[in-house]
Structures are given as C-alpha cells and as structure tokens.
Image 1 (spheres, rainbow, N blue to C red):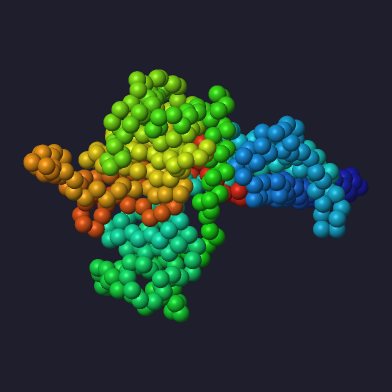
Image 2 (cartoon, one colour):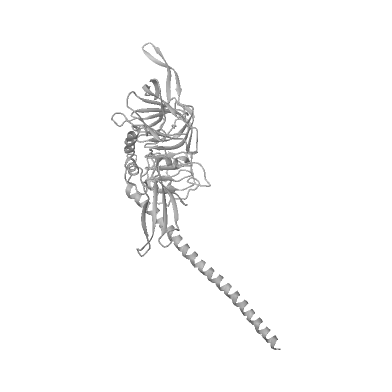
Length: 494
C-alpha cells in the first residue's frame, strides 16, 4: 500500500514537470514572437522613416533645380550642369533629415547624373536612412525633365483652325485662340480665355472652341456658336475633345527662341558638338544619308518664285554630328534619310540682313528607325517652307520650328510653264495649276504664324496627315527649345 502511494506521488510530479515544460515552451515561444514582432514593428517604423528621408531628398533637389534654373536661358542652364558646380554630380550631396520637432533623425544622400549635351533629362538617386538603423536604407530614383517644344503636335503663336476630318493624337497649344472641328485625342490648350474668331463674324468665343454640331447632330456650322461662348459654362464636348481642353494657360515665348539660336550657333562652332556654315552664297543644300554622313553644297542661286535651287557648287561630304547641331548662317535646303542619328539643322542669319528659311520638299526627309534612335529637328529663323515643285506624296519625319514665320507652303495657284514671243510681247502657251496629293508629317510642329499646306481654292496638298512622334517626349532634337522648369518624369524605388 505504501509502495502504491509513492508511485502515485511520483506520477503527479512527472505530470507537473510535463505541464511546466509545455508552459515554458509556450511562454518562450510567445516571448520570442512578441520580441520579433516588436523588432519587426521597430524595423518597419525606421524603414518608413528612411523612405521619408529619401523622398525628402528628391523634393529638396526639385526645389534646388527650380532655384538654379528658373528663368534662365538654355545656355545658362547648360553652363549650370557642365560647370561642375551642380550638387550631387561630382560627389554625393548629404543632408540631415529632421522630424516634426526639428530633431535630426537621419540623412539623405543624393547623386545626380547630369544631362548629356543638348539633352533635357537628368537622373537623380536619393538614398535615405535613420541614425537608429543606419544599415536599413531606402533608395528612390527619379528622372527630371524640362518639357521640350517638340512635345506638341502643334505649338503656335497665332490663331489656329483645324477643319473637319482632322485627327490629332498629340497636344496642341496656341498663344491665341483655337477653333477645332476634328477629333483631338490629347489636350487642346490656349493662352486666351476667349477671342473673336477672325474666320467668321459674331461675338467672342472660348479660347478653345468647336463648330461641330453636338450629338445627335452632325456636320459643322460656320456661324457664331453661342454655346461655345461666354458667359455660358464650357460644355463637355468629348465627341471632339477626347482628352479635354484647357484655357487660359501660360503663354509660350517665341521671342525667347532667339537666345536659343545664338546658343546653337556657338555650339555648332565647337567641332565636338556640331558644324557651322557661313552666310556665303544663297545658303546650303544638305542631303542626309543613311551611312551617317551628309552631302553639303553651296547654293549659288535659286528661283524666288518656286524656291527651287537653280545653281549650286559641287558637294562636300561631312559626318552628321550625332546629338549635335548643324548651323547655316543663311537659307538651308534639306532632304534625305538618317539612320541611328539625332541632329538639329538650323537656318538663321544672326549677323544681319534677311532672315533665313528652311526649304523642304525636293525629296522626302525620313527616319530609318522609329524607336527614338532617329531624331531630326529643323529650325528656321523665319519660315519652314515646302517648295513649289515638291513631291506629290511628301513625307517629313522631323520636329519643325518656324521662329518668326510659319510652317507651310505658299499659295502658288496657277503659273505659266512655257511662253511664246509674239510680236513685241510674250504669251503663255502652257500653264499648270498647283495640285499635290498627300503630305505626311511624323513629328511635331511649332509655328509663329498660321501654318498650312493647302488653300481654299483647292490648290496645295489635298490630303494632310499630321502624325505626332511620341518618341519626341523623351528624345527631343538636340538643342531644341525647352521650358526652364524641371518636372519629375519618372519615379521608382530601387
């Protein structure tokens, strides 16, 4: 009996030890879990603070760029980047990160990759951490970009009218009013709130308006449209403005391009950045070639009625300056095809005399690649002019800019092609009326005055196809005019 009792007491002790061990295991596990959760929570807090420090660095650099570049010319901005003083370029720039109480709780370190010459894009990386957990870092990379004029399908400094059948996929903006009767798949904007449309009588209408009859109607009414005029609210016309319309917006300065032209001339005289041609003769004839070179001849004379070359010198072959600028201190006739090149061709007389034009249309101007590897900019001090004897089917792959004139084609109407001398006067024995089939532009267009490739009498190009090249958003032509305000173009955490 006594032996049984001892055995029973021993069993209870074993049970107690088992229970105590189980409880201990549970408690240790629970304490370990609680500890890990506390550490995890602390880590998450510090990780979030590190992210805020990194983001603070990005916001500071955005302020810094605005402070250093706002209101400055392209040359001044280029000097800022290339002068070796931009923070974060040569060596990382570090700064304390403060909490809401003003206490330094961490740091951010900024490294910046300056833009290539002629580029508008700078890449900035900000790394943030806290003093409590300095090994726990968050890294943000952003791309800062100044908007280029090549980002618009059409940018204008005059009244603009887009007729029925026009389809535009890029942005359109004007410093004056816009009448748009086609279909716009991007924003149409104007610097004016309202204006008196010169194409019809009546009162003022909205800065961006349409004469397309609202659904379920169709067609266009050319008379004054009261619903498209103040004081009425701006109607939602998604049938015309797929992405909306915006007015008034800040004006774009075409006069400011003059400083850009001077900068391009200076850059072209640097052999590593471009080529310069003087004002001799009547200008230069430039033929772009797919082998990376261009043939350049001096234009000795041209017909001012048709703008066609009548006499020129033998050509000289030059390499196309990639990511560079070709500057002609006179008129320039341009044609040909490029392959894996980015170049801007400028015609501007900055030493006095007649303003220079760019003439196109002898042959096509084309890209080999449409993935951003081929980019052409054509900038004229006055007009970008399609000549009279242009191709019946003409293709222009380029960003076009007419600083003081317009992009377009003159009204050639009807002209005499052969004369016969009868008695004491000349009689026209054969004449031709200006009828062209199709002009296609793949790029962008900036024009000081109203552009146009056709006329109301039916002459000019019957079909006009204006395609916007989306590659110009990220690969503007070298040295093309830009805004001076940097904005964040892309953001990602590394």
